[in-house]
Length: 482
Image (cartoon, rainbow, N blue to C red; front, side, top):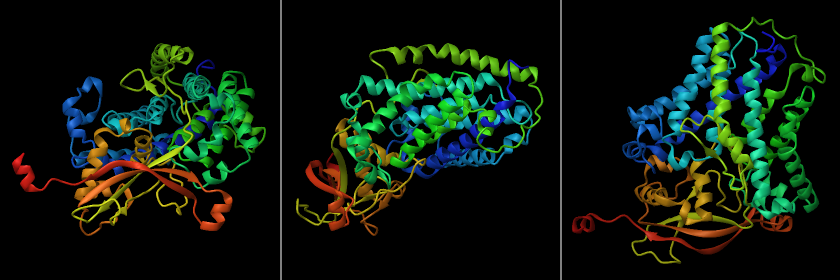
């Protein structure tokens, strides 16, 4: 079966499977810890309301059959437990068919959450995890040599991630073409990390080199993934180095880590052994006929479904982070086709005053990841995904991104809703809810090194305008009159 398997990719499969299981674990933990506040019955966009409005065929999910907050939490923790077991090697200790079933169950549980996640699950890395997870079902385990067809499909996925991101940049913001985007991006990205301040203050010449290198890695290097070894492994190495640079410079959930995992699909053990000591390849049995058939069928399916993403890569109106089917099997990817020059932040505040005034006593809510307190160094959260913090960044760009969830968020603060408050870092009203809440829009910028030494602050902020005027819950008498 030389055409179907290649023993030199035993290390690639091991790294891809174990690492992908870890990322599944992170995704399920995110759902378990944030699900009630975002999607629960007392959350911001309840699943129960969504499944009554949207039919199963438009959002396939086990939650169309049954939903409760407890069931959602149980599914999330079950997925986390299964992912942890697979990451620890459980899928290599069971028969091949059982291992495939374990990977298929991870994919099904994750798909069920994503398809009812609404706004909170509208990020490209949700589809990326599902597409990679679907391919992982057919990678096999220690009972067979790695199937090269699936590894090639993973390279095709990596190609679309990188080349799609490169093309959306070249077609989008002019600053990518004149190499000036990174003069702003480290400061205005959705979720800065602890090193973002330092990246922002790198010399502008280095920012030009960063941008130029990014274009080479995203627009040229992906084609080398399909060349013979060791060139393909070297191309994967360049992608890995670039993604690690992005990991250091910001928080992009599991996007960068999953891209790194996919890059290992192009690395063969022979190329690694040339620079690092490796054990001998394990003696694995040939692939059984049933497994061969099980791999060929999805390969044909993915090739057929690739028509739309491939056409999208060449289209002038290229779509970014778009799923062409409800199962998220073969998707279009891309990131930061445009870069903000100014960082805006929505700051939520509450007051206990019955008659609030602009200059009254307002106390600020603290978020876990997004900038708030100017003296607080941004934290590292990725690959964990702070969904509310990310959507607050979008809301600051335009009220059109806020929608129904933002109104529900304000109401939850007025009720001191525990599930929603757990999404925050600090609640300034621990004993009783505020009477009014409001939102203010600020412009944030990184302090200069001199300002940092003088004030100790990482940010400087300036009030732009009121984003949401003071609101309160209606009292029972007003409700009765309605």
